[in-house]
Amino acid sequence: MAKDTPPRWDRRMQQRLARGEAAALGELYDRFASLVHSQAHRVLDDDSAADQVTREVFGYVWENPDAYDPKDGSMRSWMARLTNRQALHRLREQERAAAAESGEGTAEELEQKLRRASVAARADYIVTSMPAPLRAALELAYHQRRDYRQTAADLGVTEDEARRRLRLGLQLLSTANTRPLDGSSPPGPRRGR
Image (cartoon, rainbow, N blue to C red; front, side, top):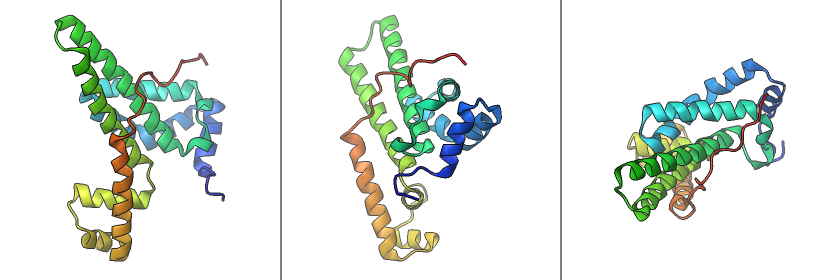
């Protein structure tokens, strides 16, 4: 399989969704609902809003299965990208409505808050899009507070390999602050089925 060829599961899932198979949507939901919800919650810090974004993202995927282009990466990274874009769009709407209602908050404060959320969303997107070995090493080091020796032992790799994975993962994450996601619009227009 060529390096830029998406996994077989991604291609089959897109084909099944395009045929309108409801079971395919169920499988997609089972696989990615926790990812979508957790990323939306990270941006919005609200369970109800994260639930709504989750429904909107899966609704968009169901109505627009051809929007996924396997050449742009895995379905997992596409779902993460849709989620971040929709969550940032919702956050922008909520903050503007709150500012208009209360008369408090400047446009500059709103943009700073949105930038912070965008950077956090980009970091989440980077982590979810990175290869599983890098993601596993970072999760062990960050969430379980393992050093590179413990990470190597937990992953069953050499210490040099653990250091390499951690270094590469951190280098990827360092781009989160320099290239924020474009949160200016929702995933896209919906079309009827």
